Image (cartoon, rainbow, N blue to C red; front, side, top):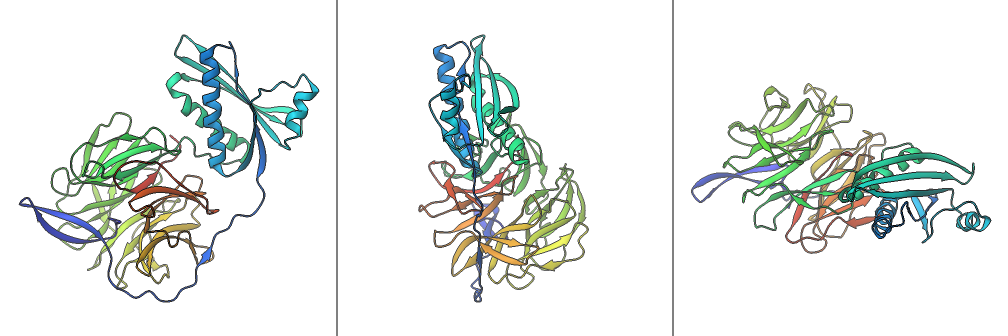
Amino acid sequence: MSLNSVNLIVKKIAGISLLILFVFQFAYPAESEVFLSLSNSGSKSRIGLADFTPVNASMEEMEMSRDLKAVLENDLILSRQFNVATANTSYKFDTDSQFSFWENKNISILIVGEVEITEQTKLAVTAKLYDFKSKEFIWSKKYFGNLNTYRYIAHQIHDEIIKNIMGEDGIACSKITFVNNTTKFKEIYVIDYDGYNLRRLTKDNSINILPKWVPGLNRLIYTSYLYGNPDLFLIDITNSKRRAVSTIQGLNSPTAFSPDGKTMVATLSRGEYPNLYLLSADGIVQRRLTQGKYIDTSPCFSPSGREICFISDRAGYPQIYIMDIDGVNLRRLATKGNCDTPMWSPKGDKIAFTMRIDRTFDIFIYDLPRSQVIRLTEKQGDNENPAWSQDGRFIAFSSTRSGKGEIYIIGLDGYTRKLVEMQGGSFMPSWSSGL
């Protein structure tokens, strides 16, 4: 169940008044509506990946070369940009047979590399791109780190390959945060985009929900009931140090940072109906953005920082609205189901959101230039809480298709994968930029 776009219900738990967040689930009939579906057109480039060459031919270097190649190959596959050709051979273009070997695989570009271990724990990796059309090396870079950072080095290589070939940022260095209840409480976790390096950030035996990334930083903001009230906390994922940002009595949730990280929009109740407020990055209230006897939640900035989309029940049931940063020019996006958790795409041309149709929740995209609604998920449990990757090509979301809440990633071509296997239920993902 999503915990965004809320009704506030005060319950007594162990003698303490606690605000529990519930999604809008009123029995509003959904009108008949036609939805488009996304499809991916165009052929993918074929790219070759040779074995990385160990400089000193030691056992450790050979193992590290295999590990680096495996991570990079997985990154290339997950990117959905290429058809990857690989072979258990390193590159040697000093013979006709070696060159023909790769040419026969019909690749346009070959990735090659060298691996060297120095001082037992130090790692140096050189990666190169060879263009088969020009028959020249077109890019080369050397990376340094420790043996335990080899996955991150492979991710860096992948992202720079994407930058050089596709002219856009890669997502292999990004991370995803989410909530899991394995401990019977709701705690915050963080994981690499490919499902490795899972780490628990909070150990409060409390309710920690709605984590969101601070733009460009290794920090998260989230709502926590640690002190009995739903307060906003900021946590540094490098050292797990945290501090309270907003402890105003009543609801402090959920939050969206502006693209420059200097301001944020939060839902505050302050003894009244939950409305939207503009806050400084330190949690100081600057001004109120919405007013009235409505429940306004789930704010999200546009990439330009000049507009905000959010959920409101002012139409009688939860719908998506957009307004300027100063609270004016309010308009509604026309949808006919109960909506929740809108998320603006990085390019600003789409808004992903959750909508309930026929008693189930699914992920949809609103194409702003065309005013069209596109359906991404259907007939596979409840699917909620969409979060865009920084390149705008993927969406992380929570789904009950396996019988419990888990985090999945779907591409705009429809390709879907589960992020990680773990106990308990997982929900409320948020996707970082490359860190």
